[in-house]
Image 1 (cartoon, rainbow, N blue to C red):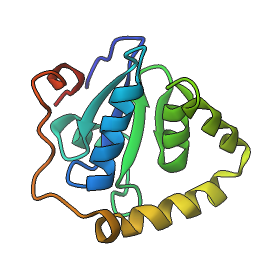
Image 2: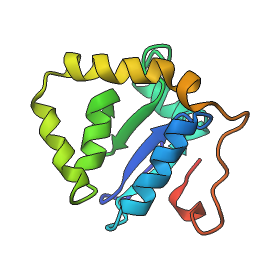
Image 3: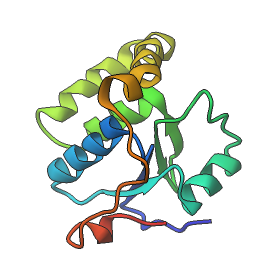
Image 4: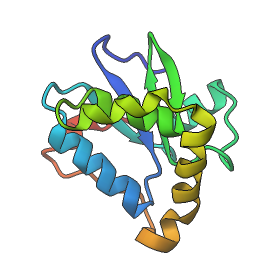
Length: 138
């Protein structure tokens, strides 16, 4: 299993989803403190974490946030914890953590279910540019 540095969290994302790839690029751009590493769910490490936490990928298939000390966060909780660590104004979104997860996840699941139809899909996982390669793991 992957050993992450203590100050890092791993964002697992659907590597063929255009919305997910755009979101990853947004996080990279706003991650001023270099807190995140990235890997597609389809990667070796993505598959290891899915197996370790026994996730049903038909129900959770777009974004996960993993850290060695805090474990795994999924769906809207993962997205809001990512936003919380990005600084102003993104971190203001974390106020939505007070909304019960079943309500947040209903909205999240609706978007996730329609993401390919609305935003499209790639044939292959995103290949990071040489400048971004150090932020991605497999």
